[in-house]
Each structure stands twice: as C-alpha cells, then as structure tokens.
Amino acid sequence: MLDDHGEFRTHFVREPSFSRHHPALVLNADFRPLSYYPLSLWPWQEAVKAVFLDRVQIIAEYDEVVRSQRHTIRIPSVVVLKDFVKPQKRVAFTRFNLFLRDEFCCQYCGAKGELTFDHVLPRSRGGVTSWENVVAACSPCNLKKANKLLKHSGLRLRHPPRRPTPEEMHAIGRRFPPNHLHESWMDFLYWDTELIHE
Image (tube, rainbow, N blue to C red):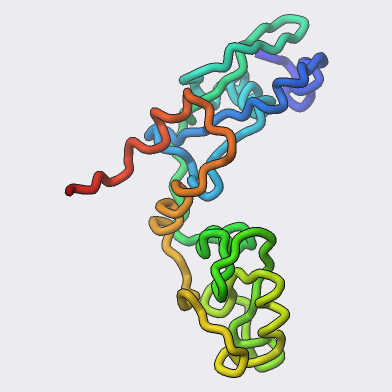
C-alpha cells in the first residue's frame, strides 16, 4: 500500500507512452459494466490507484507493466468494484446523452457527423431546454429551421423527442461502443443482452 494516496501518480514517474492508451473496463460488484453510456472506463492510473486503495479486484490485465520504486504491476484491463454502486434511476440531461438518445444522427435529415442541438419549439417562442423539446441536429438543418416553428420550417422529425429510460440508454449504448474494445472486455459487455428467438 502506498503511504500517500494523494501523491499516488507521482510514484509512477516513468509513464510509458503506450500506457496512456490502456483504459480499464469498470464493472459493478455484480460484474455488469457501471454504465454503457458512455462505457465505464477509467484511465490506467485510476485503475491502478483503486487497486492499491483496495476498492477493486483485478479481473484481467494487459501484458504491459508500470513500475514505481517499490512496485511493479501489470496494467489492469478489467476491474470489478468491491462495493456495489446503485444504478441511477434517471438519465442525466447532458449533451452526450442527448446525442446518444438520438443515436448520433440528425433528427431531421438523418445525417451523421458534426452535430449540434435544436429546440423544436424555439426558445424565443417559449420553448424550454428539456428532453421533450431538444433534439440532435446537423448544422444545415439547424440553420434551415432557425427560429421557425416546425410546421413552418419544411422539416419533419424522425422521432418525437422524449425523456429516455436508463434501460433504453443501456440498449442504445451497447450499439455505440468505444473505438477500442480490448479482447478482455468482451466477456463482460454483452452477457446480459436479451437473446432474440427466431
């Protein structure tokens, strides 16, 4: 155990460049990912720190190691919390969660790429910033709609905006994994997915 937890990172003074790209998948005590939206990942430094603080158990490791003056440890690739964290019952209204709800595509034309968000009922006409009134939109559609009511804009919504449930966000989150999925994570990501019967 390191004596000074606050100075933990400085003990690993020679951080190999590869280790910046070795995140750890974080599982709850029931071995499910803490979240799928976004996928619960910690930088390798946080994972190693949690190991030394005895807050997690290492389930899988990368081949690479990091060293301090007194310790050598293989970088964890999957860790499980020793204490169960109760899942959130509501989805926070954030830009990322809004884009995830709308599956990272414009809700007017379906374009993917650089997105912003649009108030269906413009704020200047009394529209509020809420799950039920904000959608992901590409810049061209956002400019076309501008300050108009939807019926006067020439645009149509693909899906009416609404507050998503955590279960819906988990399901969508599974379809948008991070670009890098380490092989050691796969046993823990999809085992709780409902099987579809033919």
